[in-house]
Length: 127
Image 1 (tube, rainbow, N blue to C red):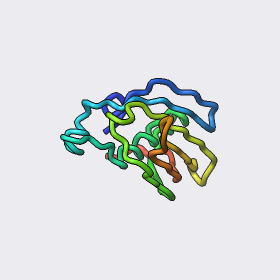
Image 2: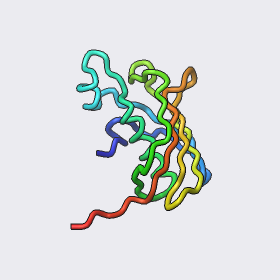
Image 3: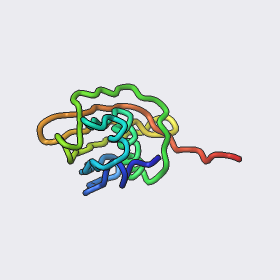
Image 4: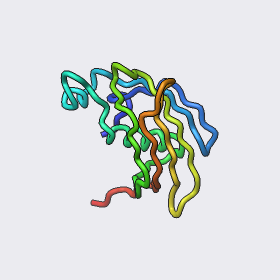
């Protein structure tokens, strides 16, 4: 499931081909928060990773799949109430058959996730 326009909305983006700064707003009514957790919604780390993947796809202009995650440090708990808007900085460098991705998800006060990994072009499914 794509998270854009469900879990988050893209407010703005500034890119130069090999890096990008994305400003996103978390959608507090997303069904993810009803299950994680209804009385105290928390952003799941897997959704942070998927958000980085989707924004990296915007940056590269192609569908990607995660080949390897080298580092995923969740440094603070993000919630739609405490940090309704986030900045996602992404830097790319060439890797074998794909790109090396360095990303940081933060707001003005704290960093919520640091990520490093490799992504490659997604191969279409065969029937």
